[in-house]
Length: 313
Image 1: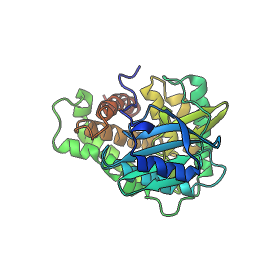
Image 2 (image 1 turned 90 degrees about the vertical axis):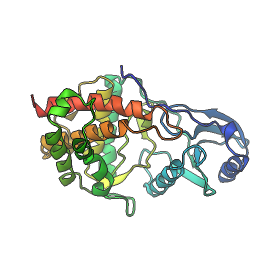
Image 3 (image 1 turned 60 degrees about the vertical axis):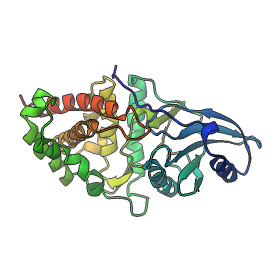
Image 4 (image 1 turned 60 degrees about the horizontal axis):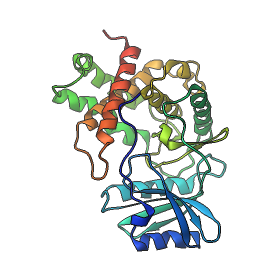
């Protein structure tokens, strides 16, 4: 079992400013008579299933600068992506937004689903892995106008080992320290292979997936960019590794990795390990007290996978 989970301290519907609640009700054209606050994820903002006086239902997420100065911008990015997704993609429909400059609220269709079991069960992981493959195919070519290209979105992450190599922390993993320069070069080389014309979610974890019977839904798209079609499948499996699953059976023979040199995948994973290690040592952002511990826990499991794939002694 991982030592920490994707969790934070969320706002509640009742705690939102009255103007924000009224703005959400304007989007829904009906007063909200009940709200069930949701947990999970790292945002300090609201996540709630709501019921309206006219019987309608929706899912609402909202955050303001008093909770975290960066989070409203994250919601705005998600709104741009969600509004541009084509019909038929398994993503809840964005019904509207409220934005007063300090607070941003997004209103989606409610999905009557649940998150996968924690830790991942093999049957659910297979189901979601197949759905991710189809998702990436359906989002190729990229349907969102002018998203960030992968090189811009991933440059900082893939160069984190170079930052660590310039001033190595005293508590680096011994294997990691021994191969720090090689890991820095390996991770940087991923920037040569992440380009593509697929809309990449890039944050595929169990808490960003909803299961509705045999149907899989994908939520939370603020980090999306245009890149290689295989990235989301690798990100999902990386999360499975965090939950103790053997990753390789899910990548062996993967249709989106046909013709992709396995070393490219290893380079990308090395970049993610470096990112988790470098960011995990930073101070926690306002309103996100568990984020750094979660990143360090992901560093440990991702690094172990990189060590296995490189075969370096």
